[in-house]
Length: 470
Image 1 (tube, rainbow, N blue to C red):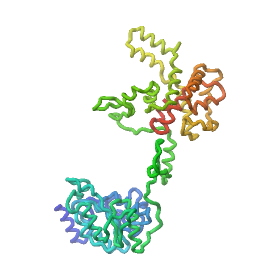
Image 2 (image 1 turned 180 degrees about the vertical axis):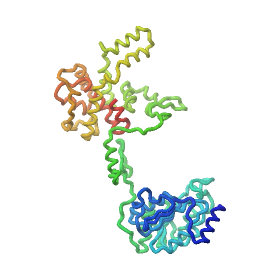
Image 3 (image 1 turned 135 degrees about the vertical axis):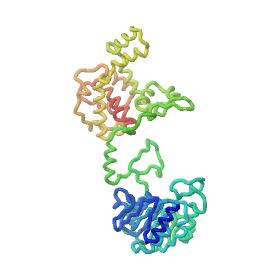
Image 4 (image 1 turned 90 degrees about the vertical axis):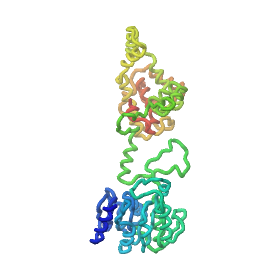
């Protein structure tokens, strides 16, 4: 405090204005100059458009945000000042009010005010002002939070500062879009999003139009949206709009992405698969308690483990056929390995491990390639529902037909297809497979079942493409 006072005194003695110390600096949209900070962000010419409104803010980041909001409503800026929120502010509201009065470029000002300090009470404004006072919640605290000067309690809290500005403006309430209370002197808001509308209303009372045509509004414009199949009320089910450039290109590329892409992170305590509740000591898998999973069918638990969700009745029919198609191991090396391990006196888990080691990834190599080709082709065709009976499968064109059909009949494939038909299982992938010339292979049927099961979780980004292909 002592040093701040000394610095201020020396500046005043030599006719020098000092900003800060806790400040992001000053920006002038007319001169294209920024001093002491990063106001305006990486592209200041977008946020700091030349206009007639000065900005004075206790918050550095909100200085740029306010300028952007004003630009969308047709208002540009002159000088934007981030004064900071130290206990002792060198260039405070009274100094800003004096500079505003003597700046021919500035027709009005916007103030962003936080609790703490009596600077605003002493400021005398001669031009219209919109004051945004925030931090009512801090009055309930017993210690300082946030910026150094944003103290809790006292006669300089948010409610007190709201009253100061209402008295200055001659109004009796806060400006909101539903109740636009303002005067020619100014308006008080407590929501930063209400600043542009309040400024426009105040300037209208001063017969002053915006600096340029409005460039948009502050209504919510989601670039992404998903109701997850829920029927939402209109106020929650917002329409998705195209993002502005260059983000629209990135969103388009993201929409082409099939499946989830998990973030790179340390694996310690980061597994999203199994967790144990510390209180109940009950384990869950992908959010499903094992107490609940114990009541599921085998097929539902297979779906939960592989696809992160139990699935529906159609999924269980598909899984039932896929498992049943691989039960007969007569003459398979895995059965011989298991028998040899058993005769050698190994424990049951070692016997199962011996059989599993024979069933390596290459055993399903062709099925994996076929599933990957199906997913690519149907995603390019814009399929959203793997059970869509009305989808025109003639749109699908896959060159590698040898992945799916052969000249000779495959008894296991025929049995699997008959099993799917008998159970009433639906699949656009199986329907495509049956439309091909030739005899489907068992690997192709397995690939079609895999693609059907994985399609929903892929589209909802519950699983990654790597999981689906595997």
